Image (cartoon, rainbow, N blue to C red; front, side, top):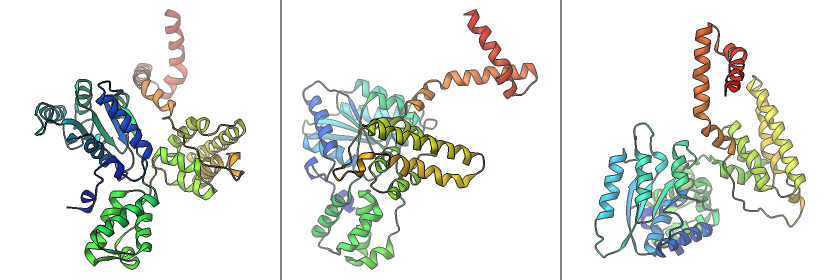
Length: 386
């Protein structure tokens, strides 16, 4: 048995950190136990190795639930998902336990090859008599929109370095393996919050050499490349004490430049409470937009200034950081409303595009000319008719 499975926490009390997540899960499961669930399903999301599946198993054990698990990304269609879950729901537990349905990795579903899978999950949520936990690394994938709306979203942050060291040292003690503190620190730094990666790395070195030393860790392990999701990018930028930390956050984000600017635009008013800081942050963001437009015209050396404005510029706009009493404040960030608006208007824009293509074809002109010179007049005539 791999150490990651062997030393998986058996209870929420054994899960390091994640106090806010644990409290939210407890309140949710309590609403089920009282017969008045606030939400039939929960969507746990966060980076790989943050402990999403572990949390699901822990709360199931705490409440004496039998886990009914299926990996949604491995279940290819509507029929398979429904059959697996429905059979499990109908079968009686050996000891009369209640059940908890775990749908792992729902973001791994492919809309085309797994046709009907999302709808199958939605049907199960609406009909279920048992609590459902779903997990995802990227809950903001457009195909998961309906699942997001049908479930309570709970973010699972990556584990901090102190919590990760405690986990690794505890495993070393139980396995009676000699582990040097400096070597553990290297593993923690390389893992960057991924508990699965850290424990598997520890096991790899320990089982090969019977000890965990700096030279062995450096010789075997490669640095795990850090890529931040939009929420981590925002948090690291807003919480940065130094300019280089904020720049590192935006340059290592998994979100592209333009979309990341939308995230900042939506969440600057949430993070900054005083008007002056908010104004300075938006000024930096507007300058970042100018540098981005220059870069897209071919001046790619301007991208460096884009990162300076979007990272350190926005981060250091917070005037309270100059105070000795400054502390990072936890805020709940929002998905950009602009992106949601685009998603809602997608069908309208597609119909407009097809209409303009027909005009261009009938008028024997280019699409751009039909859009700029002919379509506006047709639009005005159409409005007057209505």
